[in-house]
Length: 360
Image 1 (cartoon, helix red, strand yellow):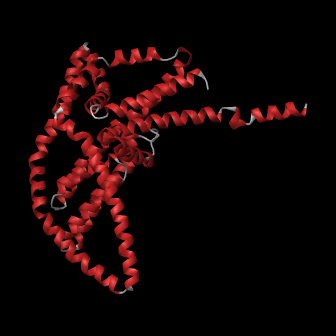
Image 2: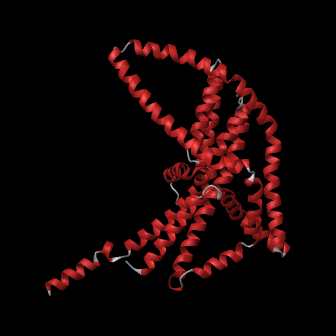
Image 3: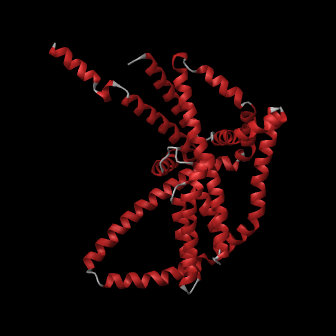
């Protein structure tokens, strides 16, 4: 084992230990780093106009937080009203679902033998218990990982401070980190960091715009379709579309269920379903190709796995780190595959040389 390999293996191990030990307090710092990374291109443009990095940083952060506050101030009164109304109607919805589903299941079970019914109930109960236990553990881990931080208002207080200092000194930090690279491999490492940056920028910034536009489309579309709570369902569907396909499927299931409970005719239900299908067509054929692009290199299945694994391992912090880690691993995996395909192990030159030497 080479000294270089041992050095990087120990460095990676220490980094993982650091994340494990301090995961309870890292969330505002990681959130600040993510915000600084997101705002850096805007700050660079403002710096060229203002000739001051500090002024550009203040302007970029001010615009960012004003946009967030304006969004909540604009939609929160209506969202709050719909959430309250939904909570009041939820018991009635559950009772209506019970009255619809139970007779159907009773009719199905009546045609089966008692032994078969017992087996089905046992299997369904066991599997449902496993799923609920897993979902409960995941939700508890995510919630407990962020609850203390939210109670201390660290996200609201520390994150803007971290964002400001990282964003102001971003170029200096990049130059300093670049100076730490081993000189013999600096060019290769720099190329991989550029690839990671391209992947993250293409996905995170592009996907954020896709989610925002989808939230607006679904919210307006479902509201115009006459669906009760259409705005909150639409906005939630758009925002969780960060997880490919999962967000749309969850929103579709909730929207169709509410439509079936609300409307007595099939036409409004078809209109609600058409809103979701049209949104999926727009996302797949226009928004994602234009804003995210096809060269990002993050497969939807890989993203879903990364988000679920991150949430299970480190709660909300893990979810926040999931996509960057997935991007880094994807870039490194593609680099390793290219090196392997250029090596003698793949081309077979080492075996050929060895065989020729044995023959002679």
